[in-house]
Length: 527
Image (tube, rainbow, N blue to C red; front, side, top):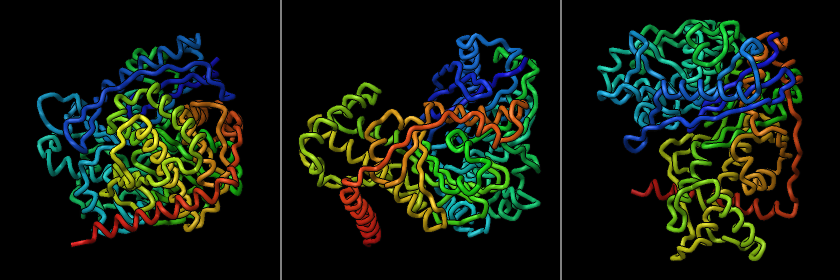
């Protein structure tokens, strides 16, 4: 009997696989690191075959740990970062930066090589940008594709397939070139609410008139929860599964996390519109849903049916959060390699210092966290980080002060996003947090106290995998629809409430945070 689901989550640094039953219980999981090439500043590349290999190892290991036979797996689901995979006429790898080694065929989501191309897109003021916060980000696929055509014309001429990473995985698994509505709507400027989703005049204006033909991009998309096809014999052998396994449409990793924590509300539209998902890891994304489209500057979306049928999705976020804390550790002379043990040592010392110094701890130190640009709500990919209040102190305690105020800045940035969503008409009350930030007690305390929201922590550390499993369970026939899967598989959560005594402190920090943005802007404008 086919009664289980395998979900795969491909992050920035690793691939994870989990085996779930229809109630959402995680039976086993496994993880495998993936390689990244950083040839120069703002460039980041993956090897898609290395990713597929990591996925196969993880799936086999998770199934073995769960003691699961292939005949029990009804469906396989993938979520992934919004990285761009490029393949040639024979479906072989094409190096996105040229050179003789073809293996680096994937532009990672965080790659900002296409800043100029993103600016060009923004300057067109095409109506399609209304669904990208009026500004094109270099993390979207169109600027990356423009860069490839402009800077690697020989590679462009050889290309025949362009994939969002999640769609690449479903293609590897099934041989189908079907594309997910989730990925194509959110990252390819496809308007799922229009009869003709591709905006040909926009593609013409940005110099990609042949994109659909060259990239083997279909006219229609596959909704979340629908099947792409069944496993091919080759993929089944690689994964240790069988050809009776259904593969569901792929998902963006953050949106899978949003489904994992908000799926219980999928059948309750009024309640859903008061919830906000925060998926925190290398970067941070906040995701909200509504039955009506609500636009806002600097917000990605609204995207129609990017996850839930009949609903619009809006996303705000920060391009570097966990990555920023790692950077601060590396940057400081008392830091070094940002291992989990190093982070824990810093967190422990921060708590000791705060207990001794109280609210005066690092009181004159202030940080703007835009070290990799500002995704939301300023929509400024050229934005830079700011640190104000440094002294000559180079001790470990000075690192702890800087680390603490960077954590504060990250969460103040989330408050900034939430405030702007409120101005767009989103009446948000509860923040559901998942991802790697669950393991940082400083961030979790701050999400509660800085935002003033009721915070819910799901009773699972794998909500991204769970969201992917929810969607796959529908494709595999274990649940009737996404709402049923959300109700049947949600693990429940623990509520955290803000400390009213700290409200005035963080209101002041927020005023200083906004002032620092004004001062940065003043400096930028001096000629």
